[in-house]
Image 1 (cartoon, rainbow, N blue to C red):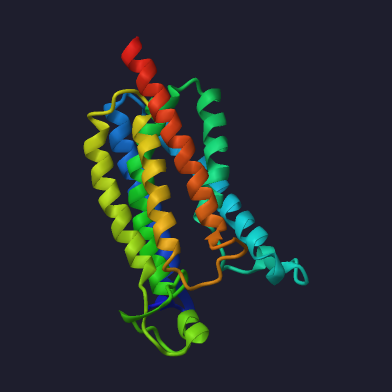
Image 2 (image 1 turned 90 degrees about the horizontal axis):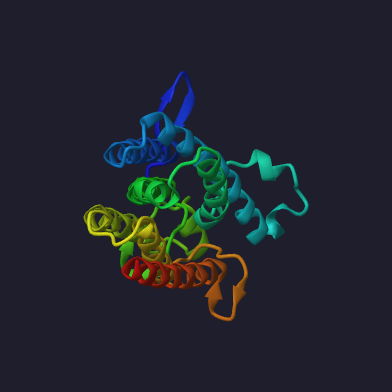
Length: 253
């Protein structure tokens, strides 16, 4: 855990923010590179990435506020003023329609454009999760062979100074593996849009599993299942159905 990377004139530069920005930059560069191969120019990729970033930040914050409403009901100003608290699925669920609208408005090929962004999202998210580790958020449950955070870290405040699952690193490594897998899969896809659907299905599985090891507040539950696992299940089902339907359509045409 290393929350402050350095300071400039007494102003702290947070490691989390730097790594999130780095993840976005690396993801954008990846999307631009893949876009060139698909005949999509860099300016168009940049416009779509900006839409995804802004809508993703709003969506991620909104879902966090909804899930953690008890923290905000008496302090509504903290919805905007507090720096902490984003849910990736919230960002994805709002960014997807915002980017879809932009793609339609620019008359771009939907499937091909989505495929360009799938590996980029996985790589950028992987780097961003290292930022979570540096901040100490998104921590795991107590685990004998886990990582011991400093005494003032959220995990230590929640469980005492005991080792916990480094769930941030679990997800970061899983996403990095998914990134390389998607790069290889991209060249073998059977229809445009399949790479993105495979990303959606794969990440849903990753997130569903890692949720069992998370020890931070997960918001409300449906039985033993968290809100993120509910979203994962729905997203996985939708992606699998679309993959089979589109494959069937592609093979019959």
